[in-house]
Image 1 (cartoon, rainbow, N blue to C red):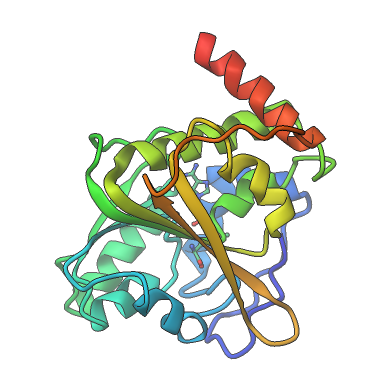
Image 2 (image 1 turned 180 degrees about the vertical axis):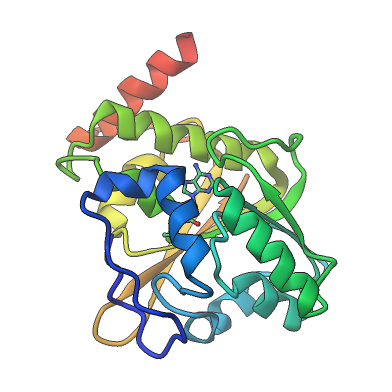
Length: 243
Ligand SMILES: C[S@@+](CC[C@H](N)C(=O)[O-])C[C@H]1O[C@@H](n2cnc3c(N)ncnc32)[C@H](O)[C@@H]1O
């Protein structure tokens, strides 16, 4: 995970952990959020606002995965998107986010401690699910990005299956990431999902990716010649389906 792409944010510099696996540990995040007021992973809202506005209607219900101490939810709220639920695995992130939103008058925004791999919401609850830099955490110990470890594949598939489930039939999943399309494609195009996939880039110099997965816009597909990562995803997804 790259923590250096945050110029202009008002954060105190936080040292990176000794091992990237720490990003999978809620204790790392609890400790970090105890000392850090605000840190915007990848880029702040102003850089991709035009892309959001083209996708999210003001009356949409929005679920944000892994909110951390980002200002994304309040920026959405200021833009008229008021039905927002944020989740994070870190209890400290959740408590501090609740305090911050309350102090700024955004008490309508709900914040819950929850695991994005096991979403506690019913089917078809949200118009939009959004994440920024949160799915990237699942890849920190993936090994070869062309052929990720089975444990990584299982976690990413658990997350995506949960997202697909909680989206309304015409809902969209927005993934803001530095994960390049060729590494995300085997997951997003898995035959389990009925969403179409498109992406944009933003940022100057270093490009970030803004994926839009629109549910039910295409029938489930199976690749004719799967690449090794697709075979890996299909194999692990098949195993988890049987168990
Ligand atoms: C890289 S930070 C991104 C934070 C924020 N989205 C941003 O853009 O600044 C990853 C966040 O995901 C949270 N997280 C990690 N694993 C999670 C999980 N399984 N479920 C929910 N949140 C998780 C961490 O606590 C952290 O807040």
